[in-house]
Image (cartoon, rainbow, N blue to C red; front, side, top):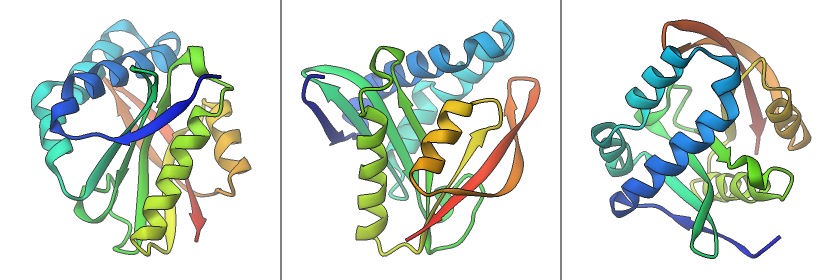
Length: 172
């Protein structure tokens, strides 16, 4: 593996976040969803307006994993009102850890997770939490390996399809 650097993203990185977000989400979930649902989700979640708002939100932080000058993954974490399901002020939500399929197994996801853990510790959060699709065993194993345990479930809307996410958390 080449050297991977994790850098904080700003609104200046909008096109990079948009590109890597769409690419990694499509690679991970396209085979399990309809084309219409996938297109709707990608447009709703990664359009210029929405990403500008999210990148500008002080309660959301984005980090991009770079291999040389190529983005290979990214992390999005939320606190406070930016959490997708508000837990509490002591929590940090990992909303996304997405890694290009070409870099699966190369510790990029681990580096991004470690950045989330570092942010949580700096902010004196009590725990990390996230939602992971019940049909994504690779991600579930990754989080379990890092000490997360399931505590609930919630519905995730993928286009017109309602899917189930396992809610997991890890105390700090």
